Image (cartoon, rainbow, N blue to C red; front, side):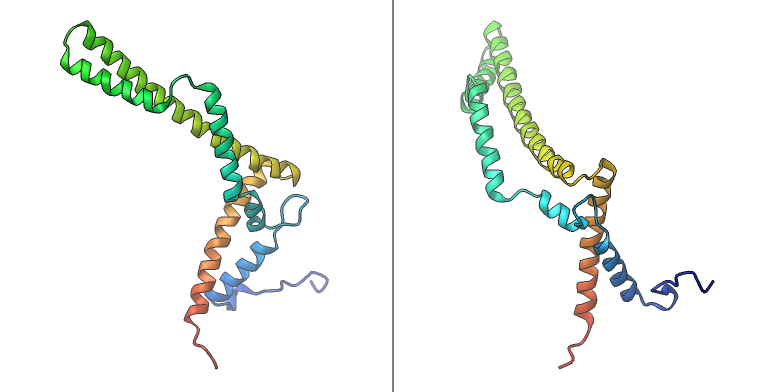
Amino acid sequence: MSNEEQPKYDATGMSLEQLVRLKKDVNESITFGNSGLNARQVTELQKMDAKQWAKVRSDYREWAKSMRVLSNLVLLVLAGVGIVLWFYFKNWIGVAGAVCAVYAVAEVFKREGHREGYVDGYDAGFEGGFNRALRISNKDALEIHEKATEMKIDDISVAAFDKQKPDVD
C-alpha cells in the first residue's frame, strides 16, 4: 500500500465550495485532441465572430441571387393578389388566385429553408474543420460541448461563492 499513489484530495472533509473549485480545476486540466486545449478553449475557437458571419451572409446573398427568378417582395405581392382574387371571385379566377397564393407562400418558405440550411451547413463545416485539424473525434466533440457547459456553470458557481465572501481589507 505504501507504493500506491495517495490521492491528492480527500473529498470527505471538503466543503461544497472546495468541491466545486476542484471540479472546475479538473475540467480546465482536461485537454482534447492534439491541441492541448480544454473544452472552453476549443469551443471559443469554433465560434465565428461578427465579421465572419457578415461574410457568410454576403456569400449567401450572392448565391441566392443566382438561384432566384422572382424576389421575395414580388412573391408576397403575388400571394396577396391571389388571396384577394380568391375571396372576390368564386370561379376559376379565384381558384387560380388561390393556387398562386399557395405557390408564392411555399416559395418564400422554401427560400427561408435554403437560407437556414446554408447557414447551418456553413456553421457545421466550420466546426468540423476545427475538429479535423485538432484530431478531435465525434465522441470527443460531444464531450467538449458537455464539458464547456459544465465549465460555464462552474464559473457561475465560483463567482457566487466569491461574491459571498466578505472583503478583508
